[in-house]
Image 1: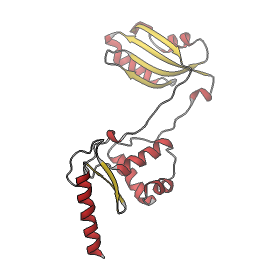
Image 2 (image 1 turned 90 degrees about the vertical axis):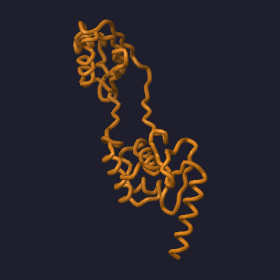
Image 3 (image 1 turned 30 degrees about the vertical axis):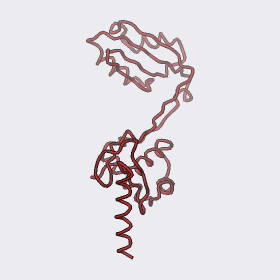
Image 4 (image 1 turned 120 degrees about the vertical axis):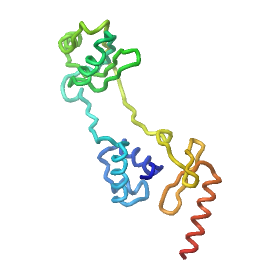
Length: 197
């Protein structure tokens, strides 16, 4: 199975912006047909690059909630258990376990005494300490960078770094490790096209 290319990267960017974007609209942006976009999305799913399509719900608008950041210093023997428990709370948006065993979570707590809610949903005896800070504003960036992919040169299969070249050749977007490989590929393509004509 071939590696993801620049077209796949652009499809991902468009889906991150709007996961409900029609394949016909994506196809216009990337110069493919809607069935070709569908095939590429299916391949990205097979590669586990796209794992699921989800909704980004602002829970604070559903009911009276207080967005907050929890920072938990957890007893070493309880780290796994506390992480699992915090992750499964309906109020939890994101949970992070740091290398030192501490846990950070973004939650939308009921708009009441947040500390009372916290003590009611978590076994405080598993903690060394904790801190709860209400959030004034937050935003998640799920951007995709070309460096996130290990793209291979269309000519020599070397890894394409940020110094690489991208070009549309015929109906496809190709990536190259250097301008020499791009020139060689384009010359071969033109020779093949002349042979067909």
